[in-house]
Image (tube, rainbow, N blue to C red; front, side, top):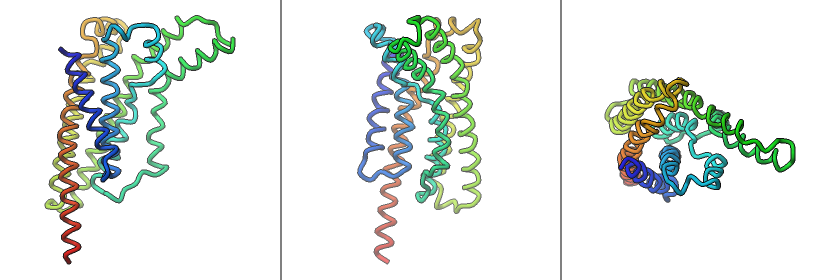
Length: 257
């Protein structure tokens, strides 16, 4: 049942992210929001796959390490720049803003390690002993969740502060709808961060790590994440449609004058 919830949340997230990212009238805000949903969806699919018996074979497990699917470090910056793009349609991502995504290397370390190990075996520079490499990757993945959680929390705090500044500087009648949507978005991510922290605090303690996974697996995080993806896909797409209609009305009004 829980696997089904995660799967359907991932499928809906994948469909909506494609609609947002590849739509004809897409804006930078649409592309960023589509990428946000896609990254959350990708992590959900990874959890679902690892609960499937056919995915436990050697080939699929090797692909699971080689192909990074849990890419969380960009989520915080994307959320922050999505808000900026939504409130300021003229805002563009430049070189300075792209530096915020450099921390994605934290997500790529297991894949880079696995690729390096395979190349080392092929060139004869490394002995074919996967045990220590596997132990390193497993241990790394446990503690990598802490900077992922911190990254989202920091950018979420920055987004909340910037939205407050924007509300003080703008006319309420003009900003009411996007501000309401962004406040709801912040509240949803705050709730998810609190839930995630309640799981991660005992999980990173060596005495409880295996026990937490054995008893709860990752359901305490990824079932709420599936609900979050459902909600983001539904509310975010409605917000986009409203913005397009409002923009069309404003264009017609300006042409009539």
